[in-house]
Amino acid sequence: MLPDLPKSGGLCAIRQPNLLPRLTTLTKLFAAGYWVVLDDVQFTRHDYHHRAHLGDLDEPDRRQWITVPTRLPHGRPTLIRDTLIDNLDRACRKTAGMLRQYYGASPYWPALAQALAPVLDAFGTGRTATVAETSTRALLGLLGWQGKILTSSDLPSRPGRSQWLADLSAITGARAYLCGTGGMTYLHPASFAAEDIAITPFRPPTTGTWSSDWSLSSLGVLAALGPQEVAAIMQRLALDHV
Image (cartoon, rainbow, N blue to C red):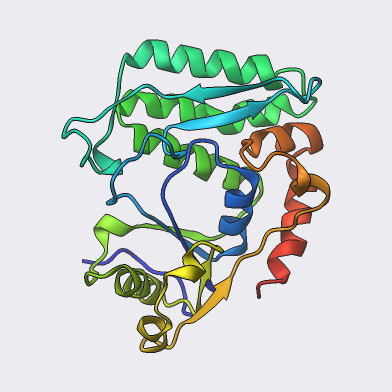
């Protein structure tokens, strides 16, 4: 049985769960009305499924990776949804300590800490993907995002990368799939055209706030500018993709 779906129309983004996602990733999801969490693809350690790059508020050159120690019960073929956290208590304490260390001096820290509390609670599930997805949900919620979140492993789809993404988009009832620049190089438009879904390229800004290191977590911008200002910026950017 399919979950309750939003009304037809709007934009759909399909993305793996990322830990405290980068600004470009968060902006893309914010611009979409629906986020399909891609949890049934292979976990890769060089990606952002279990780690985030933190930037210091006062010292721009001071940066550090925060990583959720992750075990792959099925070896390299392990899917994102099946990854497990090693040493739960220590991982949770270290994450909480690093977040406070980097952003505790922000005037917006009380709001950030409240939003991030469910992320720390999610360590209790023992699953890396749950922590990562919860962190993205928390930041979107902090920005007032009103979209709908679905999970790819819960949805029927056909094989073939383009067909698979087209099927997932069609289930949401979206009129357009919000696609990153990388996806534009391999997608077959015919699969989407058959579902009457447009492919809309997502091109984040490259100036101002977006001119900083693309690898950094969006949490730094939220701590520097505050959720209200970041939300206003993202609202304006989202209108460019309507």
